[in-house]
Image (cartoon, rainbow, N blue to C red; front, side, top):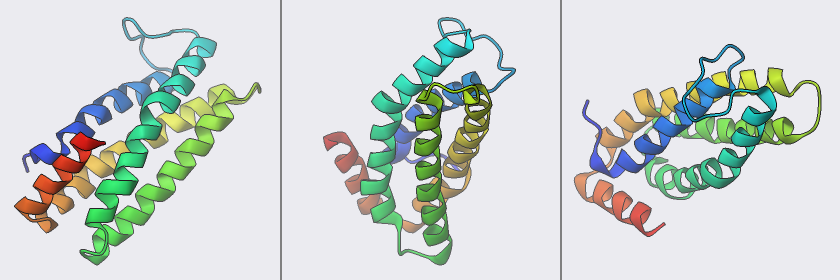
Length: 148
């Protein structure tokens, strides 16, 4: 199913999130222009979370999830799961930021969780949203995201 234009903003941001997810993984390939050393990856990841992901999560939770929730049981279940994953990811990024010997393991776990989270939204949640919301509602979603 082709992605509706109202969800393009999220999908573009998901692309950047997937790059971060790969970067966080223990045996990640090197990415041109991105940090290579674990402590540099940690600083980059924490900054990306604070400056990009928190805004992304907030827009999803305050706009998209509100518009989609209550449409059907599957969307309700997915919405609850995605919110839980947002909370887990936020907690993980706080742990990554802390000075401790486990941050490399936590970054690796977070990379896999972030990838799983994005894939769930792209492959299951967005198609359901496109099926359940009318064209007018999708246009309203797009308008709200532009204003955000």
